[in-house]
Image (cartoon, rainbow, N blue to C red):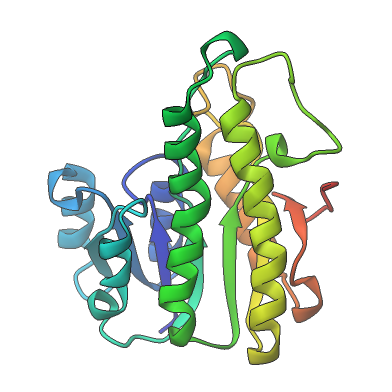
Length: 229
């Protein structure tokens, strides 16, 4: 039985990944800040006993991330998806240190510390996916007049982190990629977004299934195309 860790698993893309891999017969470790407050996760625990495990994890809290290996209880991971993230809209006139700090803590430091914590649990052939965004492409520079500047900066930093993690874990046979899920109708993406969660998750999981070691370090679209840095 294959095993996967998904962060931010209580809603949106994280919940979509959780449902997909449960449907594929994987053992799913679904991490969320307050899993005991999620009726959806509680129902999955009941419906998929022996396959589904809800973990308490706030990726912005170093102490909680440090406890992650003990929660996983030594399981070997075939796949991990760093999905948890936040997004605040704040125009230039309102930029604040607090917004940039919290965004970078959750969207960059969190995935970095999760990767550190679980890297001993990943075997040759396993995959680590960082959920990025087209907003993180310096070349594309999407919607620079908007207010998602802290978010865009955090995803650009996550992309660089992906490259560096790929170099560090490649000798151990672990593939690391950043994937842009597209504009998805979630609480973060809003109702006007292009894609449903199922559409994005379907494309991303197909791309993950097709990854080869040579793909490590890439920034990819949900369908596997190269996204410019």
